[in-house]
Image (cartoon, rainbow, N blue to C red; front, side, top):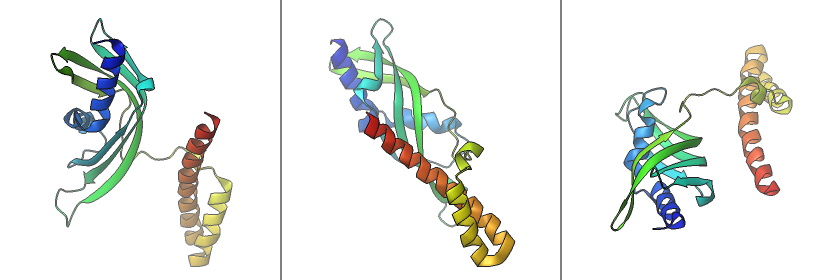
Amino acid sequence: MNIQQIKEAIAEQLYSGLCDELWYSVFDNASPGHYGIHDLEVDISEDDLEINPSTQSFTFSNTLISVTARMGSSNDSDGFDIPANFKVTGSGEYEILDDGVRINDLGVNEHLDFYDRPTPEKTNKPGAIIGGAILGASLGAIPGAVIGGFIGGLLGVILDDSSEEESKSEND
């Protein structure tokens, strides 16, 4: 197999479900602990893969992992699901078989945290915070304004993150 064929085979395995168990193991050390991962989706481009044939290893970047984690408890009455997206980089090892390529190991460089809080610079979105505070104040004076401002700040993060992705797409 040539390098391009290896790259194509690895990319297909990473996003098609052929190595889901390896992806699931990436979440074994996620914070906080969970009671299972489901709805796994991986978005990776061959352009973001680097293959090293001499060591039968690879690295990847700019990879989006979307999952749903079961939190709190495994039963329906006490647990809840959290959908999450993680943009990751990482590496893995593969071997060449008679009928193709098999990924044997996979890891990510980032610590995966389901409850990761937005940073202050992301939440400092004046329009969202002020709008949330006005909405909150209409619900109940000062405490409502504080809660509304917080919710508005979080919405600002969500809207800001999506607008960053859109502007990146437009600039490419």
